[in-house]
Image (tube, rainbow, N blue to C red; front, top):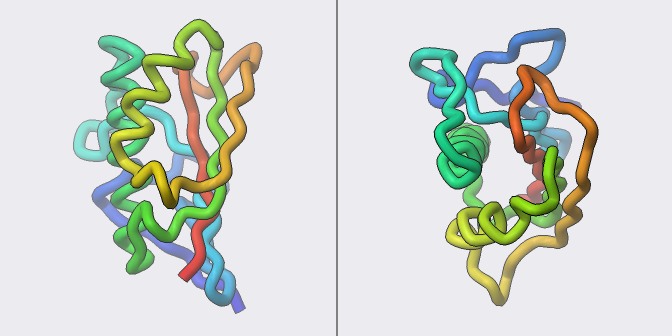
Amino acid sequence: MKKIIYTEKAPAPIGPYSQAVLAGNMLYTSGQIALNPETMELVLGSIESETKQVMENLKAVLEAAGMTFENVIKTSIFLIDMEDFAKVNNVYGSYFNETTAPARETIEVAGLPKDVNIEISMIAMR
């Protein structure tokens, strides 16, 4: 049985998808971009501020499911420019304990929704 996870502390879906789906003890988040959930405006000042907003959005979705970043077992990071990897990694890494960090993939892509520079999705487990 699946349960739809929704919180007003993360951007509302802008299409036919959910912020996350809980299936048994597994949580699958949709990709998050740097939308401020209060204004639905993009946070694009720098790759660091964009990444921080994405991670804060994901944190809110995890919390709505009763989880934290410690529950995350896999992340997927999509970047427009792999040259931003070190800066993204620095912000991303501040949300995880290095000894228990999840598996991860980082992929350079040709384009992302709303012309953002980064999108991240996660899989977490209770």
